[in-house]
Length: 351
Image (cartoon, rainbow, N blue to C red):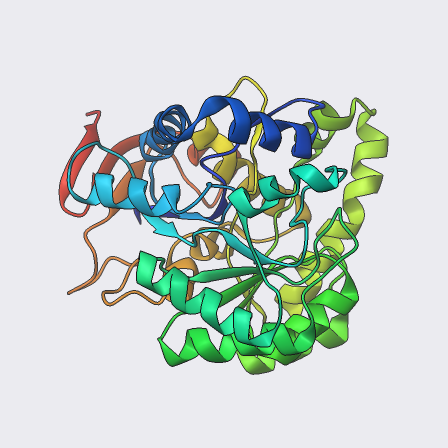
């Protein structure tokens, strides 16, 4: 089966966390002990795992230091190293503290190493301009700062969106609570990441406005590995995620596949996207719609000069082939990648 190259639309190449690890502690370790060079080399290895799995484009959404994602994007584009096409957001635009919780005041500077902390409406506009000058492809904001309780104000978000759109850049929002989701929608964002508390009324507004939804769902197997709970309990816990996804589909929201998987489970990072595709399948999403969410629709969300995620004239030449029937054996066939082409160059060809 021949497909466009797959697109992973929510990843953190420069961040990893052991099972049962602490997000803040791991960030502090990377900032204070690893350094940019080692961190970038590790990110490159993770990026290459995506390409090896047939994912030819990765949207990297922060936790990448100060524009290390932009540097990696340029290195791959220049041919210094092989890897997927990187779509880089630069540091996440966030309220005080970012998503690092429990830092003592004298160590708050660490949040500034990972996030662009916004301090008012004019600073919000300035931050977008800084990002654009550094070469980002899109802007990511934290509409809520979970696990911290602080958040950007509505006016700050609106200023970010207006400035980004003036320079033809899209804005996507980390939003988990229903309040954050609605404020981000009202502020004019182009995408909602996670959306764990998405309501039917909010989904209908997203559909009407053409706002994309990136559900970072888990499979039952992955949830069990994360939490250690039994299968029946995992299925019960994930029922809410499944219902939100299917509700969004019913309301005709544009679904884009993104994993947000950064926990090390002993499997290649490149499997992250495929695991979220399996989660969509478990929720009841049809195989063709799942493939569209990580090809055509994902490509449209990226807003690039040339079409991506389709096989047609004048589109980017990203093509893969898998062995098997995706319609009738999706959960196995999606992992059987035998051919990979990115931008016209062949990276894998198993006859």
